[in-house]
Image (cartoon, rainbow over all chains, first blue to last red; front, side):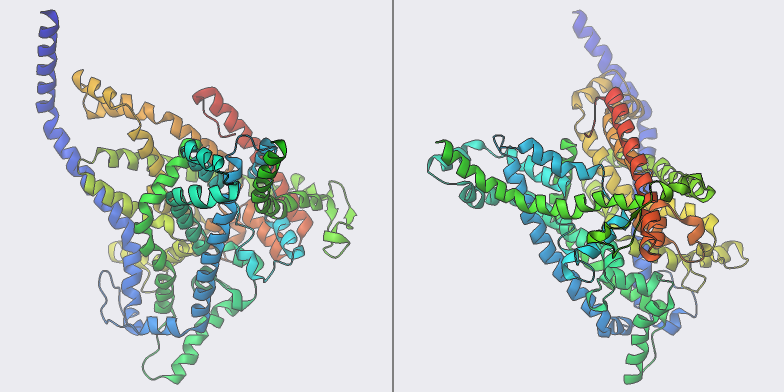
Length: 316
Length: 302
């Protein structure tokens, strides 16, 4: 009898509460949606603004502010970007390093992760400590430079591949994933006489596709976004990556660098007729060309990297 | 039996070889190269320049010079200001996203909010220079002149605008990505707690205050620990790309300073000494943070 009356009381209370706050809640919900929409707009508008200007004729763009839509539409700016041999070559280098670098990196980390997932591995703790210590103490920009110079890594394509290939953090994420796989599969394969190599190749690797996809994505992203490797260790123009070219076109204050790349536009201009794109719109077209490719592949990988992040977070 | 176990283990060691060799070459060698902080380093003296003259702590004379304290304080101040804004920003975004009722809209907003994370600091700095330019394409100056009139301002040539630009760019770039872990933590909170609170008549605001926020404490502590370790090194990419020659001296942090002096200026020993000192401080900060984390929230990263 008592409990029933309490329940009734409670339900009336919640009902009353709901009615009372519903107007307040609705206002909040609306405000929340509007605020989030505003945030989305703030996030995307800078890209849109630059895209619009990069699609506008240069001299016209200098005449007055443009906000949302090109005033004098043209693809000419992109034509200059594509015909600039430095940029095209930088794209080739960046794609090559992203593909090779990611494959090497995943190979190295996956092999290590598999070995370290074996509890009975002799010296497992030692390996782990050895690989983990650099997370906490290490060199700095200068000692890295000195070592790279001595290892012959300056102006060497391998500097894009090897130094960043192994990441302890990502290796642990892969290992956590492998440890979650059912052990029985491995055991039965072992009884059938399969060695570690066969097990890794025909059982573990196929089962690890989701984590490999996530790592592949992260690896490609970090290769694409990397500026400092080029900045620190590469002065040979034939090895420049896209981020460095963008840096030189838009940000570098040393006039030599800048003119090298924008002068190409001048030279191309003398060969063709028509008006010359201004440096401003050329900068914007370069920015879009360098930035956009990654933004296109990212939605496809979203479900993988969010999962990958979470595995890492749980471990951390 | 034993020999077969050994031979089966052998290949596991082979699997580990690439990782070990890479770590040795690209992590341990630079780590040991810190000894050049105690030398008058000459890159051509002996193997790896290890034949250079030992000078003890001479290169650490900067510890008694004013410029270093200015540099160190600026590094800490920049990092701390950025933490102060970016932590609450991501947390608040996560809470707002969590209150959205339409799940499709929530997914959409999340996807948009991650976009700037997949953009390099070169791009972000370029966007900032374009927006703050005095040219007609400089949107901020266009707005300023349209609304308030007056002169167009060379924002990036004046160091007092650097800190706000840094904070805004950091929050803009990482607010969405930073909210992922908070959202994940919110989703692990027991739904029964919310049901019980509803039954007790707690509205959404009180549920937020008494259930969601306390549920986020462990995550926040872990993230804090991670970022405390970086307090003294700062984000090289960000500062380097936002700087220009006019304001460089007034906006350098330790990592950009060691780059300019060490790599560009080839003063290897002194720059390494500065780098080593800041590395030691970072390590101590990390240890302190980890210890505190263990005490408060039963969480640690080591």
